[in-house]
Image (cartoon, rainbow, N blue to C red):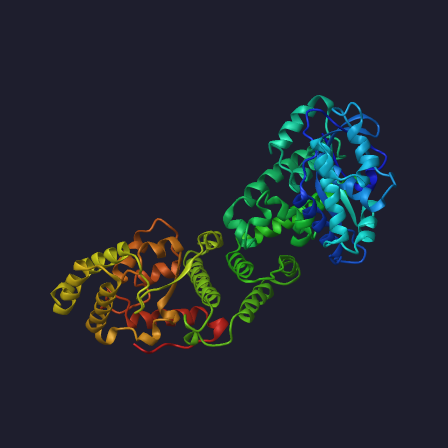
Length: 581
């Protein structure tokens, strides 16, 4: 199978035969309009530079050659026919385009309708289902230009249809299939067995025996491709550089090729094969090995950044927390700057994105969830790096380091969790009320000896409604606060960072606003990843006092946790010790 790119204008004077094993034309109005709208959007987009050509890439057109300039169409009939109808409408009676033959159209009725009659008949009058759909599509095109979004766009569309590959153009991926494999390819294409990605085409080009490369070069490239693809499938590596997955869900290697060829996400959306077209051009200019060298060099840089604990965490943070992160810019800095300067610029970029106020001023009620999430993520990152530095100092040589899981951050949608429960009760279901009451009175058995709470407890089980539960809930929190005395966290501090951690949504939802002991048990025994700072809060890591209260998050815990956040993030916010113990 040979693959290439062909502009629409290069298909002129060709005859395309639709075999009998293919169904007829079946595109409806919404299919036609979607294509026209997409082409219009392509026309209206600004060029990245004056001299850079753009390509609107269509899905593959798979053909088998019958004679020169005459082909059987194995796949792509719908788009090929729609573009014929578009040309027919725009250029009226000018038939200087490609044409069709139909194996099942012995009398030539369909060909005659397409060529001579379509503009003068009503598609609703057609009894032949093929003519009906062809006429309907043509009418949709006409209506789109006369009364729809295409009004006034005829000349731009004409220019694009006539353009060759040296200019902005519409192009098919052109598959020429061996005659003996035509039916097999038709089946595979229609059942989705052939993955139509830019990477597939580039790999085929790089490994083809007639691409001009030596056999040993192809063997090395093949092994390198395999190794790189394995790494790109590593989620820890992938989400360091990608804040989301949908654009490259088909083949992650597309990301690497696009980055090499400076293909933007917008360009990739409209033309997923732009990187392939550049490789195709390089092959024709005998520069294929040089083009591959660019990919390999870029991959090595990405891997070097991944293996460095500081670069991994700071770039991963910026990618995940920055809307318009430009990886190309940071790669250029990495190549041009010293290691110290590169590190300082990353930290400065992080600092500039954060609000200019002290740690103690942030609050769950006043600041956005995303701002608080950024600070908590950064505290986890700096904690991991702090451990790495200490281990390196103690053990000497380079040590393995814990990686903050940017992949899980994306997949699990972490919540911001209050360590000590808020006074407000968010529970609404009876099953959750029952679970809360049972776990609370198991953990704090002394509550059963309190007459007021015993009465509220009995009232709830006699009539388990929201009113009775809220009375019991507030009564329990008030009694526990009373027992803590001076160690109780001030209500005004419950929304501050000293009482907030990151936790995956599943774990957070699983304990239904439970009190500290159950939260602690759930988190310590959880099989899921628990962020390092969340783990340390519930292990009472920050509180260095001898008398530690294991059944509650106290004022001492709050203050020591706040002090750790201040110390770890002092480079971003300045340092301020918390002394409200």
